[in-house]
Image (cartoon, rainbow, N blue to C red; front, side, top):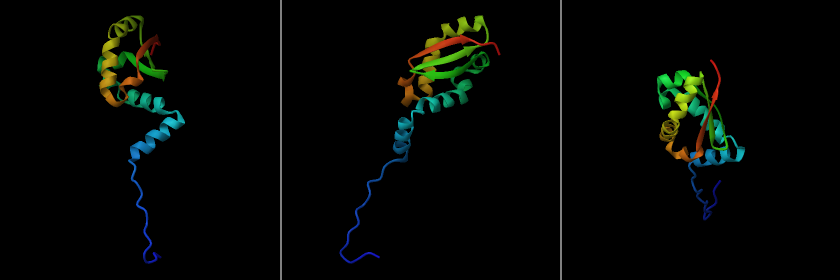
Length: 109
């Protein structure tokens, strides 16, 4: 029960995304969450044809590793590397600085 004359201090509201962002950073899982988002939206990011022959597999130290389906797609993907980077950065502009390079690896699927 509030006594007369007692004042309660108002809390300073904090946005939930700031709290979650700090928690994610402290847990070190930000890159994993970003990679998951990229994987889920890969077709939208790079287009249907590219997505049929490439697949993001890991993200570490700012390098996105993308597997390719054949040697010819490896050459094709390397040619479009800067385009892929641009599209990824446009996908989540607030995280654009987190990926600074793409490395392509051959993995038949």
